Image (cartoon, rainbow, N blue to C red; front, side, top):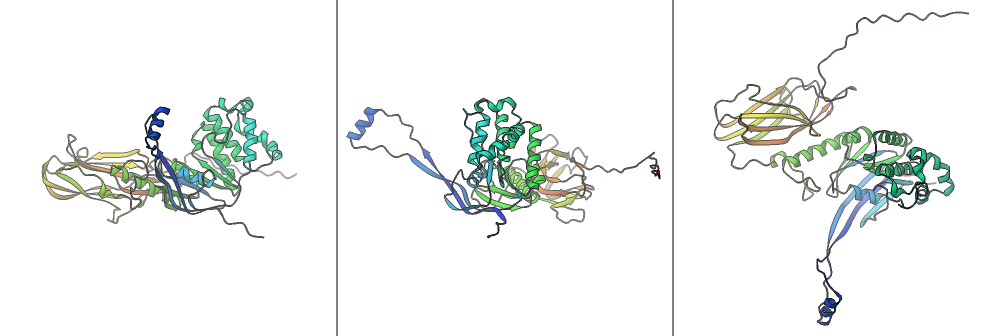
Length: 435
């Protein structure tokens, strides 16, 4: 007997192309078409173009693992899931699945609007490979989980989006799948059902099931997934640990924003090649002051990408004033990867004023003796400006770095603190009674 494959899903060189047709915007009548035919003029065929949504995907999902897939809108995430679930067939390449698969993709997909919730449970169960007896045996459990009550016997066209989602999730997770595919659908619904859904998926994971989930909630992906895959422009950029993949993805998005690139894939790299660098960020043309070098080091002068919460940092700002400039100063901001402002200051506010007239190259350093941040990904924003706000040059998404924390602290910062226990009496010894 052949041993089961250790991989639940294997994609090899998968390509998916779609044909996009351009319809001629020309109105015709039977008479005009007849005249055209009599004159020997044929109607031109509609023009069409080929869109390559996925470009040679190679991806393996090990059995019993949870993989999160990230990427911006239009990157190919949903197309990839529809290929895995068999809704689409690949143009070229090979897909191998090992185990019964269930999916939560488009909201309400697979439901007949005129059938009741109960009837749709039966239909979907049969489609997913269950017998009628198996479905009926689990019917009460599915209905109870969906919390639809009397609505279960109403046509699903009367359901709200949240009710659709409850029914879809209940069916998908109670047909005993070995592989569960989820495409952002859990964003629909109330907080109570979202927690309930996460608990159910945790049960799946603990039972050794395979889960593939597309999500824009990067924090959940980092906490909950075993692996992460980043897809952009129809290509797999990176596969690895969630923390590492998410960090690289956030850095690339910040650099794309700083470069002024549009935020639709594949804008991170229009040609599918290298990602933009900080030096590609736009400078203000004709500005007398430019930012030339931005560096992040520890207090020993060594460049860093990962730091501990108790460590210190130095942010180096190299500038060039090509002609004499009055009232020059610098603004500095520390930003969390989700856009939250952690701290902002300026040389004017700190009374660290530059000379009245500045010319040539120079360096300004901001020293942080103790960082005090909790785990996460961060970047800097820096600008050269005057005290009245005239902007010379700026950089966003500069010097991305991650903070590592050993412990269970939560929040944004870790203030200096200590515990002290006062007035706690020792517990009295337990007296044993001997009969």
